[in-house]
Image (cartoon, rainbow, N blue to C red; front, side, top):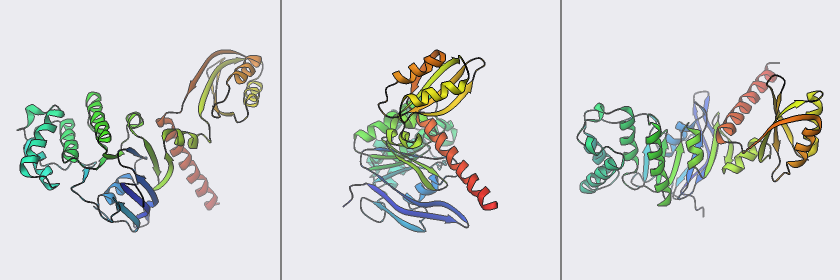
Length: 325
């Protein structure tokens, strides 16, 4: 029997001729932050709405704790769109949301006070939601998704409208949820924040999974097995071609990713295989050029995202051209 808290198998959703979600499968384990990523229109929000049973899949299955439907008292949901009552005070709003999720009136009001204090809104408990800033309204929606202590928190763009300090506050809450064993299904465009939070990732494009796994796993998928990017800034003694050929031949599996012209100097960026010895590459570069600077970098999530989405779009364009011809 699967230990997954949430499991999607072969999920499809169409809107007319558009395949919004196409044969999507993934699982979320208890106590992990799962980064669910993709460009606009990739199918992320549609998937989250199917998880929350706002809409139904055309094909496939979604199972929560082994069952075919979610238990709304055990799941928290922060939608991308704000859905708060503008004329209701902040405290009453959160207490109402808590009762909708199965809490008693007294417990919901107690939790609402605690979360408003936690989100630095203790002095705005009686303020109508519509009078609050967008960032503070977002904090109320965030609190409403977690005040009932869910086992799964589905968060769609939770950082929307939050300044850097409040982004850090929201991340701290997500880390605490993980420590308590709550799973967080996180969809956000702030990739630097997601990289700091998530244990595993899935990158979606055109409704299909493009990359999936831990950061190291998707990094290797995005670079064809490379573990490290090596950037060398040089002034060639002869032609740049000799430098490129020498550095690529120095280590088996090294691959020239790109070159950049900075005037008299050139920057070579090489994808290096795991645990590669950089010495032979630097020696080869020095034999054919003056080496000015050397940098190494493990590919960040932002770059993985850009490369993968760009590659997907290039593949689509190539297929379209082939079909047209």
